[in-house]
Image 1: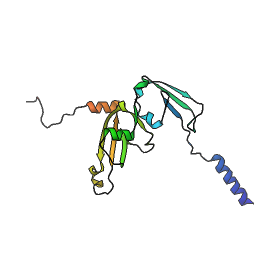
Image 2: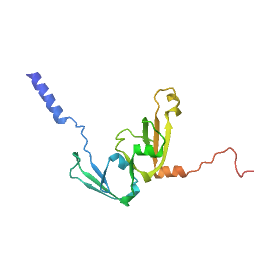
Image 3: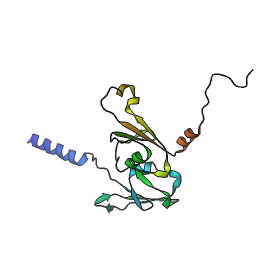
Image 4: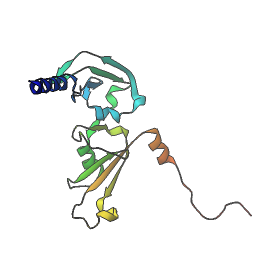
Length: 173
């Protein structure tokens, strides 16, 4: 009897006090277009005119979203969002499918197919092959790394910086 009572108390407390791993996803609209959270991470914040939050639930394409974020930009017709695959085909000459994507030096691990970037916000696309890395030269696995730099203040400052290097002092007698 004691064993049954102990097990039932253990199960009840586990059910009531256990943590839930469910995350409630929020629908994000940019100029009335549904975009993903990772897409909005790489959107120019200076182009945002207003942000409104609505707490009511909405169902889009059979998926329940717990709230909405409505973002209005300063120039709604300016944006041309393209996927990472489109960036690979338009900005590089890579034909293989073995590609690792990076945006501003950060690896893209999740939602590669849903991430879209504004074509006008792309500063530079750099391609690095796995043969460049010393430890991977003898490996049978060959891949390319595509690093997409977007027009942030830091990236623009680095692009416009001119480094002068040399050993001789100029103008000193």
